[in-house]
Image 1: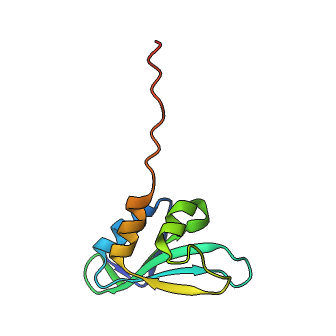
Image 2: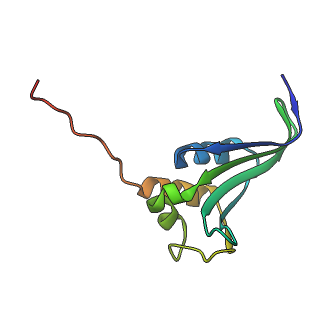
Length: 110
């Protein structure tokens, strides 16, 4: 199946966004805050001309749900509402690596 047109997806985790950044050719990556809502987002977008997508592919992450990733990604730790900042794939990777791994404790009493 080929898709002709633009495709947008919402991802739940910074690792998924990083995967998109590594798969898309020459991606543009922006961290930005909504003008009115002030909500935080990071998106990866690129024009793709090969199968299966012929058009622009965009993956977006609601960064408010990942405050440690957001703070690690930005030099000043945050943006003002309406502000945007271009970031690179290596910066995404560094922010992901800075996130703590939350492993739930194992109950050995049973």
